Image (cartoon, rainbow, N blue to C red; front, side):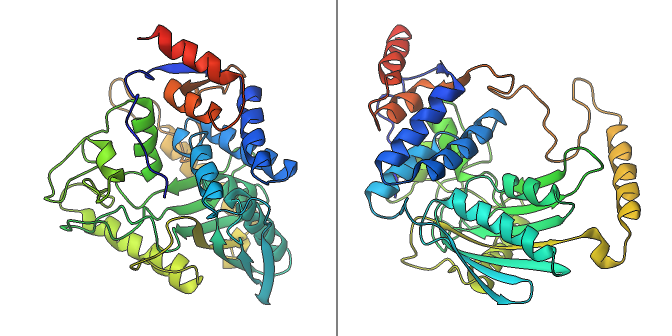
Length: 372
């Protein structure tokens, strides 16, 4: 398991501008040196940079630290490619082979689209993949083909940092759910969300950036709120993530997390939360289907889509609040979205550069030195 250290947080505060191509080359270099082929490394790099540009650093460059650590610990096999076994009409099992999760995610998307061309509904069970990262790219890829997509992912039984309501220890992972729907000539609607109060990655990203954790994201073993993110990574942990929901309603997020655990772990066969579960990798269950499978014409679906979109877009908002938009539609302004440099936490960039001989390491060190 990757350990998050706090030493040097003050000295490495702030951000450094990093050209996207330099960040891409660093990711590729780190993975190729550890056994990945250039094509696989490029695919992972593009996935991480897309998350970074979209304003989701929790699934961006910081994940390279995790991947390198897991490869070095022989928990992740960068040279292994996913395999596919078709078990019934419209049903496939993808085995990630503990390889790079992004490749498994691509394989799931390809299988869903391929199978839906031949069958009304496609179902893919995913087992033994490395960290999948954001599920949204899978949803967008499937929706781009005019299909609806549902997905449920767990940590193959590990990653137990979420405490059930009233509990003094973690028992579940953050267990994300995915729902994606084709749009009317525009971007699809994509829901990619955790069943916990926060994703673990969002907390880790704030820790690496030296930012405080918002109220409600963590509590200690007596249920008291805490903003000390490092407690989540101590042994034994001194902080835990609550399930999704406000005070008194966490049972709803907990119930949803259990449902995801059963779908991804028991139904898909990836393994459920249990003592001694592996601490790396993802499993999941994914479905795809055309809106027409329920007897609704494509024109009828798109007409309803437009009605909902317009109804929400014309919502009267509170003073100072932005216009209401559909889930998955970017509000714009993400780092690097305009082709400019990414703004990466200086501490993170320095640690990434330590994974290779990238010359950016010296630049990051210079930038942090000037901030002292």
